[in-house]
Image (cartoon, rainbow, N blue to C red):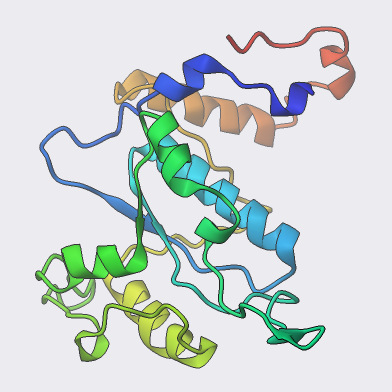
Length: 208
C-alpha cells in the first residue's frame, strides 16, 4: 500500500544536524506504559526525531510490557521482558538507513556513563550511573523508574512539551534563514492560516 511504500531516498538521508566533530549526541526515551500501539507509536516518533536531529537512538532496556508479560501460556513458560529488538529488527533498520544509529541502553551507559561523559545538568559535575550499574535488562519497573530513568533525567535535557501549544519541526539546514522559515510557518498556523484539508484533495505531494 502507499502507506508502506519504500522510498529509496529516505535510506540515504543524513540530518544536517549530525555532529561532524566525531562527538556523538544521543536521544533516550522511556517506554510508554500503555498498550502495544502506544508503545509502538512512541518508539516510531522517537526514531523519527533521532533521524531528523542526527542523534544516536538509545533503546530502553528489556522490560515487561502491558498485556505482553504473561509468564505462562498453556502451561509453557513465556518471555515476560521485551526490548524493541524483539519486535523490530533494529540492526537491519539502522543498516538500511544511513542517518540512523541504534544502540542499547547498556551500550550507552558503558560508552558514556561509565566513562564520565554524562554530567548533572544542575551541578555541572560528572555523574556516574547509580551503583555503577549498566545492565537493566529484565529489571523490575521500580528499579528502572527510580534509578535509571531518574538518572537519565538528571543528565539530559528533558523538553517540556504541551501538545496544545507546541509543534515539533526541523529546519532543512543549519542556516538561520531556514530556522526563521519554520518559525514563520508556526506563527501562520497559530493565526488561523492553516489551509482547509479540502485544498489538498486530488493534489498529492511528491515524495521522491
